[in-house]
Structure formats: structure tokens, C-alpha cells
Length: 195
Length: 261
Image 1 (cartoon, rainbow over the protein chains, first blue to last red):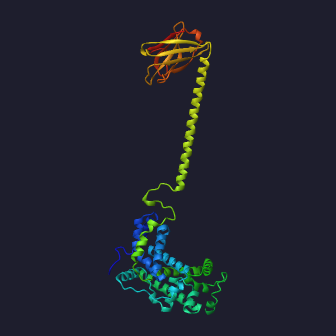
Image 2 (cartoon, chains in turn blue, cyan; image 1 turned 45 degrees about the horizontal axis):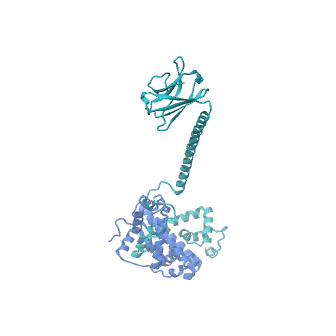
Image 3 (spheres, each protein chain N blue to C red; image 1 turned 60 degrees about the horizontal axis):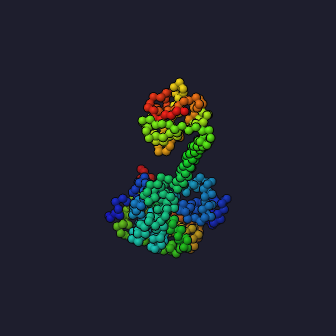
């Protein structure tokens, strides 16, 4: 299995992440370089997932890292991992741009997953699954579809109902049931690891 | 449940039920509710502990969903653009260590320090000017006294004779019938810091009265103001000797000047 680098992006200690961000907040360009070399693929992946367009995803990535360079002091390691924070920032920024350009429904129509069976992706899945004990694969397709539309494209219940030509109540039920299933799976996984 | 869902669009902030809230919580946690819905749910959560607990249970799910993406390698163009950000972007807030240079103060603090220093310097300068002014005033008063004395038609002028240690010296004693006078001296040798010249006023019985100590003022004529213990007409002569800097009760050192009155 080919590894991207010796220090995987999800296996860093919180203190190390806080130090890195503190250095960036202080203007340390070497620290910023270390950050984007480690996480640029992750941020780009989220941007591409949401925007469905490489050029638009590129804009999102540049915007996200610009914000990080200017306000790295906003990261708080006590509230979660750096990778989670970066993904959240990237997702939120991408959805903002979708809404601004009124492209939500256009990109959300194409829900096919971009599959890549390269060694990079295989390593990512293995690493991710070691830390994030959750997979949308456990959900029925209709629940997964609604959840993805809401989460990755920022669509409201009404938007999803209109797009899928479904009753509003059906959309709400599917999303709620899907989230409950995911939450139960996560809890079961945590209980197993704890025992 | 169907009725609840059918009417769930009517999100009256005052009447949002827990069942209605439950259907909104997933998107609330995802952050993708409409603004109106977001506010409605927030107000409900402020009041309802059970719904708050359910929202907190969804939070790890929302976090895990972030990772449900296929990983794609970023193009080189993206890497290059990101790499250029530090060179091109201006920080939104002051950094403690910009451009790897150590900054001791923020701009506000620097201005405060500069202003304080300026005020301090101004105060010191004012004290210096006051001292100088007072010195000038004293010098002016002394010069006015000299002018008063020298312009008095009853002024007596007595040239003094130099003695061996001060062969090149020239001196004149000016006095009135009062008890003040001026000794103007030029060419006296410089002295060690612990020595001074002392003027003696000689009585008829040989006793010496102290006429004051003075030190030569470099190349300039030395003007020594004399205040005599007794009227001038009492004295028969004057002499100048080298004494300790603080003066002596009587002559102990060599005589450098002398004259008769």
C-alpha cells in the first residue's frame, strides 16, 4: 500500500496540531507549507465533492487556505481534529459558493460518486475507517441520497423534495431515519471499542 | 405523525413541538436549515432539554459524514496557488512575529511609549532651561553690580604687584568706601582641583581678614567680588596666596599678588 507521507493526516496529536496552527497564526510560512502539503488533497476532495467542477473546486481550496493563513488562530484543538475542522471549513465555503452562484441544484443532480481505485484512495479509506467508524453504505440508497443532498450540497427539505419529486414529509422521514441509523451504528462501534 | 409532518412547515416559534423539532434536528446539526427554521429550532432547544440531548447525539454523525468523501489528489496548479498565498495575502490581523522579525510592541503601544518619552524629554529640557535661566539671572545681577561699581566716580583702583609664582599675572583691585570691591585678575597659573587663590585684607596690626577664594577662569580675566568684613579705609594692604580650595583661616601658601591701599 502506497502511503502519501510518513505522517498520515488523521494520526496527528491534538497538541501537535495546535502548535502547527499557532505557528501559522504567527506568520510561519514553513508551518503553512507543512499544513497544505498534508491536507491539500483532503480539502480539494471535499471541494470537488461539493462543487463537482475542478476549476470551482480549485477556487474553493485557494479560498480555504487563504482564510487559514489569515486566521489560523481560530482553530481550537480541544474542539476536534484539524482534519475535521478543515473539512468543515471547506464544505461550508463550497456550499456558500454554490448558493451564491445558485448552482446547488445543478451540481446536486449528479450524485454519482467519483470512484478512484488508486493506491492513494485505498490508503485514505483504510486510514479513514480506522478513525471514523461510519459508512454511508449501511443506509438504504434513498436515505443515503437525501442525507448526501442535504449535507454535501446544503439543500433544504423543500429543495430535496422538489428535486426528487417527493413529499416533504417523506424527505424529512428519510433523513431522520438515516441519521438515527448512522448514530446507532456509531454508538455501537464506540461501545465495541470500549469493551 | 403524518399530520405532524404535513403541518411541520408551519414553524411557529411559539408552538414548535418536539416531534416537529425532531425532523429538523438532522439538518440543524448539518447547518443546512433555512434561516427561519434555524432560528425556530434554536429557540426550541433553549427550552427543551430532550431535544438538546438528541441534537448532541447527532453531532458525531455530522462529523463522521465529513469523511465520507472519495480522496482525490489535488492538481499541481492548486498546490502552486496555495503555495503563493503567504507571499500575496495580507494578514487580517496584526501578527506577533511578522516577516520573522521580532516586534516588541504593537503600534498602539509604540505610540504610547513614544509619546511618554517625548513628554519626559520635554520635562527634562524645561528643567534644564529653567536652571540656565536662573544662572543667567545671577550672572546678569553680578554684571550689573560690576557696572554700578565701575561707573562710580569715587571708585578707587589699586594695581597689584605679582610675586614669583605668578610673574605674568596682572591684577587691579577696585573698591569704594563701602565694603564691596572687585578684584580683576589675568594670567594667574591654573591650580590643582583641591587648591584656590585667596584674597587677604591686611589691617594695620598685621592681622589678615579673609577676602574670599576664587579660581582662575581659564584664559578669561577673573572677576572676584570682594565683600570686606570692615570698611576699606581700615585696611592698609591686600595680598593673594595659594590656599586649600575651601579657604584657610590664615595665609599658609605662597603669595602671588600684593598691593598697598
